[in-house]
Image (cartoon, rainbow, N blue to C red; front, side, top):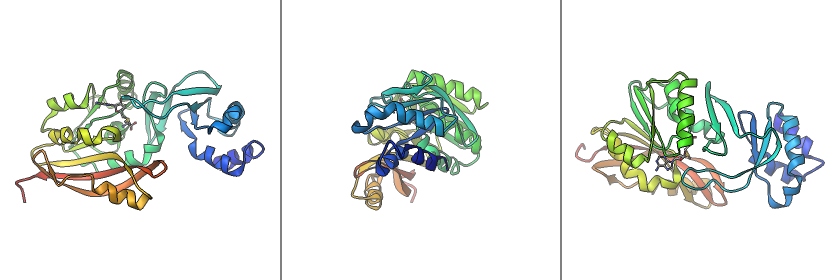
Amino acid sequence: MRGKGLKEKLKSLLSESEAAELKSSLEIIGDLAVIRLPPGLKPLGGRLAEAIMQVHGNVKAVFSQASPVEGEFRLRRLQHLAGESRTETVHREHGCLFKADIARTYFSPRLQYERIRVARLVQPGETVVNMFAGVGCFSIVIARKAKPAKVYSVDLNPQAYRYMLENILLNRLIGVVKPVLGDAKTVVEKLKGQADRVLMPLPAKAREYLPYALQALKPQGGWIHYYDFVQAAGRGEALTEAFKLIPRSLEGFRLKAAFGRVVRSVGPRWYQIVLDVEARPSEAV
Ligand SMILES: C[S@@+](CC[C@H](N)C(=O)[O-])C[C@H]1O[C@@H](n2cnc3c(N)ncnc32)[C@H](O)[C@@H]1O
């Protein structure tokens, strides 16, 4: 209903296809909104932002995305369009609260389904390592919805780590979610052989970090949730390409991608995919 309201509201400012494009780019994070404005629509930014705030009464500020998600910390530059001038907010998802600064930490509401999907796979008592945890979203949803023994939650961005600490408190998960500031490569050195399950929600480093993810697994093996980008003509082809990414064996484990899905389209012929990879020791047949 809300989305329809926005399209109606934008009728006088935009063509139908422009309104549809804007609507699909709209992300609401807590009480903040982010849109992507095609160059031709930049002069209308302020008016479009006001329209968004009128339709979504809970939105207190609107930003336009001024750069792609980039750099080691996966941040995007934001340009303020309307409303309050702050970038910190609290987002509610799956009954969990995530505090984040959308200019200084990575946060995407578009991973909402992925977070609950993975949480539903976690078995009671598991030790989970989340190598690229951001402000702790996957870790917190897992700790809330499953019954893991521990979720080691690693991030390199000191700001993300700071919010992760706050989010652990906010969601009363002290002792279950273990925050770690550092490079996942180095952290995994200390967690060698401990994990039943490893999450790798950073497609840009997936191939480089897969051997480290495997080192974190227990000797009897476990599961890796592997996120990557693939180039393909369509979603079906993207999945076919995705399954080719996983070697048959690595680091003393036999690997098998048991499940895959396209998480989202991230550009023309460019897709983010996830594979659930089962890893078992090579000698066990
Ligand atoms: C795509 S975001 C992860 C999002 C998060 N899982 C979520 O659900 O919001 C990737 C994160 O990896 C972190 N990162 C980048 N390189 C890293 C590394 N070498 N070790 C640990 N964290 C890293 C970034 O700071 C960023 O917060």
